[in-house]
Image (cartoon, one colour):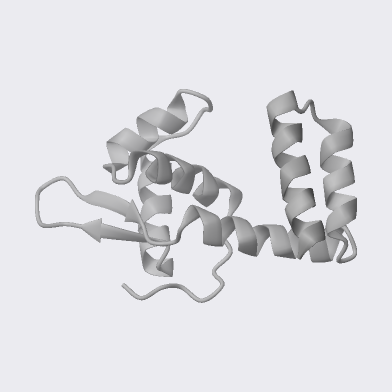
Length: 127
């Protein structure tokens, strides 16, 4: 299936993609069990969502055996960039600084993460 053009996954589809990104490939049953560990979701709902995601071009499906194996077609990085760009433009009036200040002001950040952020800022200042 071809790479989708700016298909925005729904929140439920993102949860499924998270499972597929971490496992690389999985059956509907495996995805369902992973999701069911943290929320109330029916097997048929997971199956239907994954079928829709296949139709949208978000996942591929190997149906050469009895059990279908799904893989994410969209990359985590590309999806993050796409959704983050939309979020910055719509919620933060195009200001990445506002996003960062909001994120750092409202969430606990470890010293290691702060050092990583500082190193990135130093690199960006040099460019």
